Length: 204
Image (cartoon, rainbow, N blue to C red; front, top):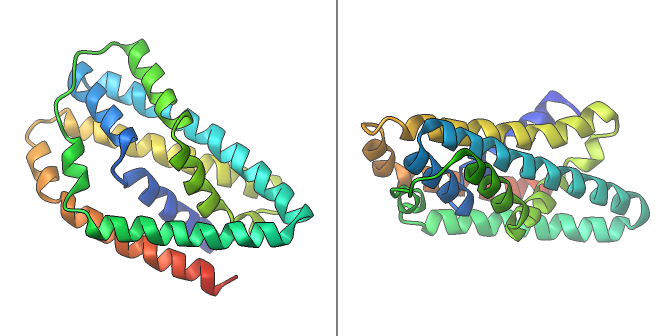
């Protein structure tokens, strides 16, 4: 895998992690309800689930590429359309991030870890996201190092992003500022996702 291809993978992983959804809501809940430590536990438990999905998706797409290239190409097209749909939804959002920044209930470390891994493993949208994401990188990951990067990049990005969320939310003075910029975050994410979808279709 070339450095430029990895940068593309990194960019999409960052956008996937940053998009508002049930994962963000769960980390926010445990951070605000149990403190910084519980939020970080939830974040890295969530990232383990992401790593499991990444590995399963990578292996499945690799098999399809060898045995059924037409099916693989169809998945790549559908994946690009899904990225575009995510981008349009983000552009239409009126601050989806802000809606998730609500106070949480008291929680403990075990509950934070359990909820973190469960929200990633039982969210079918994550599988769709990885199908959309990995279809353009499987062909360039032709060795063990490349395949390892494809799995480890989303896992580490996810863990670091939600750790950052836990650290930010542990300082109450920062929360109002984050809410104020939530709509801008959504709009920027939407533009980049649409551009990435176009790139997938053009380079097929």
